[in-house]
Length: 306
Image (tube, rainbow, N blue to C red):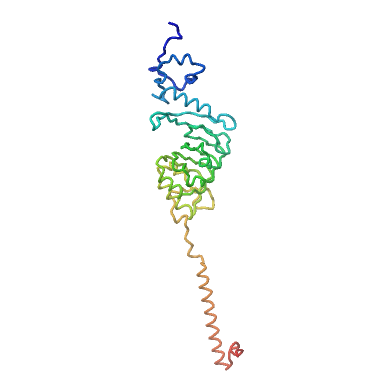
């Protein structure tokens, strides 16, 4: 028989889904060949990344990621589909995808991401705002964000957001954080069953009586999530006894100083003034009495009264 009439069985072969099998998706260019593959839907991947996953859907996800990957300047990111999990619907596949935009000189989070993005690496940039995690719909399914070595000084934009209720990893090491809304974070983590890592080390944390007690309670309560708790320290300040001290080890008295017993308090000063005035008045009365007894003259003030 002619080659064109032969049927091809694709199942049972060790397909490497990391290689270029995109031709399986091109029904126009490869129509005649694809018609001869009788069991295309039964072809399974055998590589380590996508074991026992159907070849055609996996290649479809890889092609979509390749088309959407922001690899062009100025982002210059790389994209990788790390794993493919079955969707709860039992029919489709759910990709686990990492977009790496680290050390690219970015000043803000990317505006557009591939639709399958679950992990975003943006280490070593000049990013200052986390607002896109809340306001940008492309970040709806981004559950892991690695923002180490940036210039983030506030995460208040995350307060009360759905993103904070669903994230898995939030890493903010080596940024400019001085304070965080501990109540909002605590409230979110009590409801977030996916949270796995919250890295906060090597930031210039404020150590005072207003912020530190609640923050210390927070990191100790969630020490299983705050993996770098040993690196969560007070900011460097040569005039502060707590400079670079681990916040988890601080005593309340070290940040909430009691007034010195040797300092004059306002109430003490007032009492001293009143006591002095009383002594002066009593002394004046005694002098006037002695003067009246000796000279018979009334005190000047009494003599002037009508």
